[in-house]
Length: 246
Image 1 (spheres, rainbow, N blue to C red):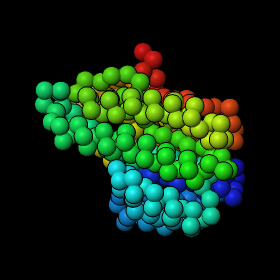
Image 2: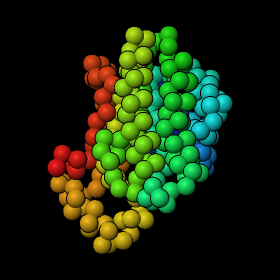
Image 3: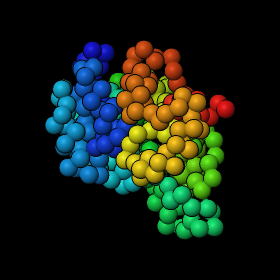
Image 4: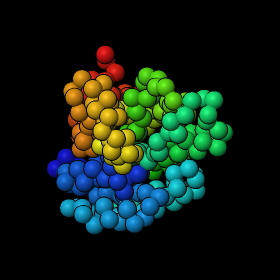
């Protein structure tokens, strides 16, 4: 029970990687705040938790909403020890010729600017006691993918933000790292996996021969947030079945 007495905040906690991670934190003794723009989804996950849990609605693109989320956690549990900035959306899957300015702006706002808003508010809450923050980047933050202009730009930005924020915050006892998932069995990928030809092609590109289960990403998040990772600072670690080392 390595998170006994600790409070964890997870954005995008209503489904996928966020929900899997929330449940694992609770199983390891944490009090968990599950934040999502879909309050019903957050409440549904909270209802399944084995430990103390609280659902909170948030629009991660709005700094005021993010600040209110963090204040909710502090008011509800008295402290914030760990945060997992996981909320995000998929890309438009268009070439740069096809991508419009609104699609660019939306993806950058949700996948990059939101991480800054959350980091800033969470760091203030952790400033006097220290803590650990994990961001969700992507393998698309390490390599480029075709038809991924805005998504790759946002996720590369999360990698850079993670590294720079890690340097700013470590002197305050706050460790910042990121996970970089590859193809993972979430609703963001569900449409592609429903196409048998596309699903088989995707799996063929992954040396391990399958896509990830959300729990496999969650396992790394828990490690990075734990005291066992006390010397891990500013790292952005791929969890992708070997896809990007080819």
